[in-house]
Amino acid sequence: MTRMSMKRFCAIVRDTVRSLPAEIQRHLGNIVIDVEEEPTEEFLREAGFTEEEIAAGETLYGYFQPLEGVAAADLLEHPSRIIIFKRPLEEDFHDPEQLQIEIRKTVIHEIAHHFGWTDRDLERFDNDPDPFQKNKKKDKNQHHDTEMS
Image (tube, rainbow, N blue to C red):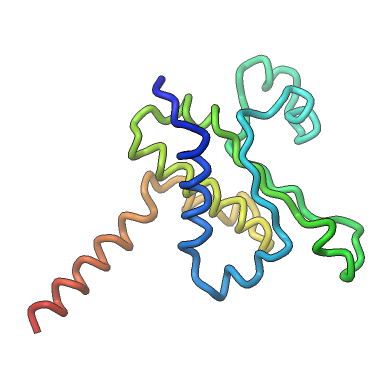
């Protein structure tokens, strides 16, 4: 397994957030996005994993910890938190290009939870090996059409 530096991994996370449309970014002021190596067994238990699932090696790529029980005036002092776990992504996606895609997918997936989307709502997005490729093709075609006119 090729390991990506923490600096590079965090840069992909940061660039993903920066690439989001302004109308989404303006609603992210009360979210902290952290990168950690991997979830602990205790964290996985608290996230609802069974001992059998943990023993089988099941893990998380990311996790959204919503803000709960905090008054509106305290939102900035007690933000919601998204954690992106580096090692599980690296272990499952060996190709550097696919790893970058999966990091982006994980960040967007967890941000979607902030907006109330469930895992079920996100199934089509999650199951697409490269949901960003369609946009690239569309953008290239539009760019090509513009050049020809």
